[in-house]
Amino acid sequence: MEILLYLGGLLFVLVGLGISIALHELGHLVPAKLFGVHVGQYMIGFGPKLFSRKIGETEYGVKALPVGGFISMSGMYPPSPGEEDTASRGAFRALIQDARAANDETIDPARAGRVFYLLPVWKRVIVMFGGPFMNLVLAVVIFTVLLSGIGVQQGTTTIASVSQCVLSAGSTQKTCAPSDPVAPAAQAGVRPGDRIVSVDGHSVSTFAQASAIIQASPGKTIPFVVERGGSRVTLQLTPVAAQRQAVDQNGSPVVNDKGLPVMHQVGYAGVGAQLAYVQQPITAGVDQAFANAGSVVSLISNLPVRVWDVGVSLVTGTPRDPNGPLSVVGVGRIAGEVATADAPLLNRFAVLLSLMGSLNIALFVFNLVPLLPLDGGHIAVALWEGIKRVWAKAFRRPPPKPVDATRLVPLTIVVAGLLIAMGALLMIADLFNPVKLPT
Image (tube, rainbow, N blue to C red):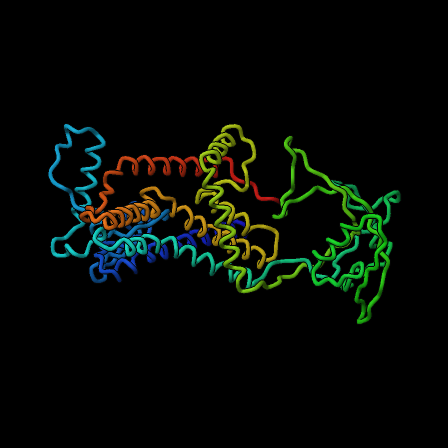
């Protein structure tokens, strides 16, 4: 059964990734066709073709490796200016000319006016931005379903458990010893099933609010009003001072420069809350999507360092940063582990949805990096041509020729090579030193 669940998690990621890629390429295809560009192919995946079907002038198909996709548009770049002697001009010139020759083959003389490079700048930007934009839209939909449909699991004001004694931070003790001090909640008479109404005179609607007041009141006796059996009962609660590890705004433990936990003193009562899914406002999905996008931008800005750290962890066997980059293999492994986790089915499904939402945000942000062959590189080329045209018009000069992006082919090959190398390293690391999920 566990193997089937693990495979189910992998299948969830593969299907989700396929849908994400298909919608990404659809985001390019639809505006390209609307603007009259001839599109020869719409393909999901790379490598050997599994199947395809031609509808109208476009061949639609699926290839063996589900790690990307593409559409083939006529005339991505201007045609070659003329014959060049590639043998006498070095390897880079040869690469440029080969790219021009391949581009020229996509330009059908019968469709000479239906080429990408002749589109106005704004239309080219829309075509190239359409792919990442679809990933953003899909992520917003996923996060909206997750947060506003399913909800966020939060502690309610209903008490689920009451500790009978106070244990030191980090203790593995599971039962109370006679010498252990009685927990404040148990001493005050709090019972499981009580619903917290107010703490220290402040009405509370979430357990987090009640917990914040308790933590801010070590050693202070405060009124603790609960609803029990339809009646309100006022108890006197005196939280004890306890040392607990500090956490940041994301709930992650805080450590100092030496890697040691940062401790601080808080009030402790010894109560646990019942958990429930609380639906969030309809705008929460948008907020979550852009919050994730900010995290991905931060990761990409430090990508060389992050990838180097992954390589060091692979060689030394040290634990990897759970917030570091992953390959598709790593995402699949995490999905499999989530699917087999000892947790309610709804909890596991929510985590898998969150994973797919984050994956689409990563696709959105990464594809906008202004380097060819990424979509952001094509957008940058179009915008540069637009700037040149505005400059020429402002100074009453003849309109400039279309920007010949084939001159950037050597740089494109270097970028593509680095992306392939990075992907290979991440895949190897995800196989032999995967990210460990918190238990």
